Length: 392
Ligand SMILES: Nc1ncnc2c1ncn2[C@@H]1O[C@H](COP(=O)(O)OP(=O)(O)OP(=O)(O)O)[C@@H](O)[C@H]1O
Ligand SMILES: [Mg+2]
Image (cartoon, rainbow, N blue to C red; front, side):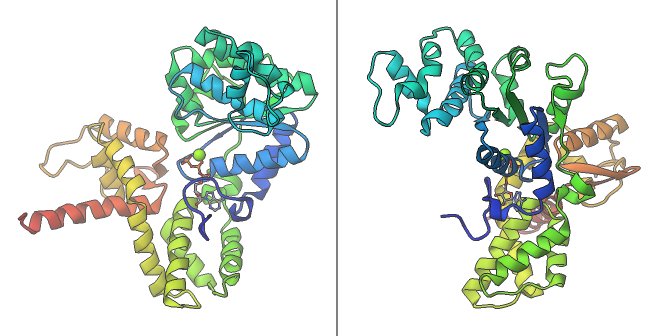
């Protein structure tokens, strides 16, 4: 069952706040046969948007394939994911490639999976070389488009992860997909730095292959979502449960979360269940505060992961703390040792590349997610408490 405010993972269309015009652009481009790049920070709704775009494209008669590159550990595995996603259009069954393999090995087709559902992939199912298998899978979208005369739209989510499967994976992919007709590709990912280089630096595999559709800043709004859309959505969503949220509370909420999609939904979920449990009918500053603290606890895991990752570089955590405390970025450290300026600059660039921090002006940075900034500030308080309270 989907919780009343869905959190963590793609949301249904009804809970996709403020993305209508972006979606329309996205669908139009893909329908026209253009390739698009949707890169942006973590948990801002990339997957939710593309899945809704695919639903709309299917309603308009296109075939679609959604391939998550994260979790594939070898090119064969990635190839199987592509084959599964393509065959599903014909069979309506997930993991249809297994059936293709069985049928290729001599098994009889079943009532559920017929010969013509998997015919496209029978030759592929007999392929023993991983490299040829992968390349064959890359050509399946084109084969489906040819066979049916329909447009085939393929999504590669967390695309940057495909690059880890081998040194020439991106080159091989580009060589195949650029020769296709009747197909369009959408590339999604959260490692913005890697993707931007791959798609916009000369000499890189996907140079100028796809149109970047900026999501984080669409329409000039933070995270690309108009605050008025939040207001309308939240009013209706609470009203449907006979609860009320006033403009001032929505402002306060969006102030606290910066309008970051998942952080905002996380606070709303906590708020809704808190109100339900306490029988409250309208949102108050106190309820909001309690809900914020609850959401903060729930976000601790993803935040702790970000934080741990920053620990792998010498000055990242230190510079991150300075951003969180709005401290002078280039000052000496607590022991009075200077932090070399180039190191600070490098750390700032690395934080920006990870989609964690943004530059506001000369020497002024802030966290993309205010709640992550709050998490970082509280780390100090926690260690302070640890320092004062003697360990037993
Ligand atoms: N437009 C939106 N309206 C409301 N909530 C949203 C929206 N976009 C994202 N969210 C919230 O963010 C969560 C994550 O969404 P989704 O998985 O689509 O993001 P993502 O950018 O693909 O994340 P990841 O970086 O983890 O892949 C959702 O479960 C939901 O709580
Ligand atoms: Mg995603």
